[in-house]
Amino acid sequence: MFRLSLADAYEPLGALLANRTGPTQDFDAALGWFERAAEEGSAVALYQLGAMRQKGLGIPHDPEAAITLYRRAAERGSAHACMRLGILYAEGVDAPQDFAIAADWYAQAAARGNLDAKCSLAFLHIRGAGVAVDTEKGIGLLEQAAHEGSQSAAWALFNIHTDGTDAMPNPEAAARWLERAADLGSAAAACRLAQWLEDGYQPAPPAERILALLEAAARRGETAAQAIWGLLLHEGRHVLRDEGLAWRWLIRAAEGGSAFAQAWLGDTLSTGGGVKVDREAAAVWYEKAAAQGHAGALAVLTGMQMREGAIGARFSRTFAQWRKAAERGDANAQRVLGDFYRRGIGVEPSILEARHWLEASAWQGHAGAQLLLGQLLARGDELPADAVRAATLFRAAADQGNAEATYNLGLCHEHGIGVPRDNRAALAAYRRAADTGMKEASVATVRLSLTPAGSYSSPDGGHLPGHQQAVPISAVGASSNRTG
Image 1: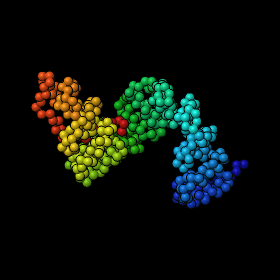
Image 2: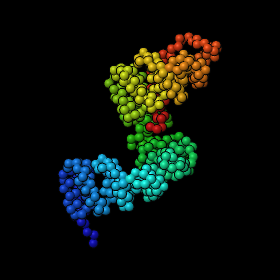
Image 3: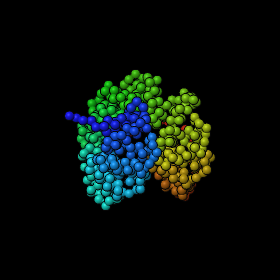
Image 4: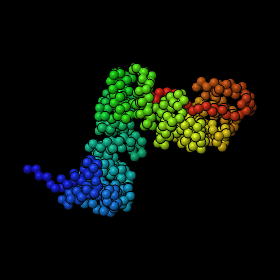
């Protein structure tokens, strides 16, 4: 006959009170139940007591007592306690850092079935931390963990075989392990495979296999997969086109919080792409996407509000969303925020704030920010002039195909602004810009082609063009950036 021990009853009561799964959170009461369960020999309760000691939940933070409790739990067979001890000694925060001790605890946890511990032990072997360097053994441990069901191990193997840091690059092996991660339920892996399918990347699993993994992730409720699956159905790429089904999947993704799907619905409802135009509903979806920092939705809302002359209380929320996205590191948001501060849109003008955000965006390689910051530094009317830096920024943006930056780089070479005078380099830059259809560059190309060697005649006297117009906020729909 099945017999329930007192420990089996006490420990769940403690968990209910400690983890907010009960009627109220009460660390004092939880501590009492865990202590009673520990007295009855519960390894789980000992582990929970160690965690409370380590985190200072309801009792003073006491790392030494926590380690003692974890050790007692490990002695009673707790793989989680072994894993926690390994982490403590590897991180060196609440215990002296000692990778050899960490490796021992990871090994004990792995032997008891903890796959995360097996992965951690694998990387100690790969890095030679606390154990002898043994890349082959480390990769072998990761392969074992991946076969046993660890998404983390499958992803690690994908990265190892992709970047070639710890092993020779092996695209076929990388593809197999990415497929394994998707098969283990990783929506990110399924979405990566879908992107490979879009890009025609090889080697990749068969299209049918990728689509099956993506659909499975969508059916599990993974919003990123739902959004991509819906988009494929909408556009009829790799699957039969089905507008109704696509719409349902994209709505599910949007309602689940996918900023990309929300922006897509905003675009579709505002333009009438297969549905009746409903700009009010579109604005609602744009607002939802913008609230998550979706730059495309923010751009559309900003454009709408500026056209409506709503630069006031209503715009303050949009400005705050741009700032939030910029603070998260979005390069486009940083560029836009810099221009807002420069022109005083929704905020008091501040050229110092403008420079701060433009520098942050330019550092990330945003061509628009590099162009604008370069113009400001070249002209020297709003910021201290720095011709050398300006030319460097124009070159960086030109290397990304920005026509205006390429034209400005030509001016720099022609007039010796931040770089030595060089008509040949100037003409090459003008021609590249002219190839994009830029009229000023075409005129400059003809003019310089007719200028005798060694002569530097120019109607503009060597000054950069006064391109002071607003940095464009949006030229395309909110969802055109599929990275969401």
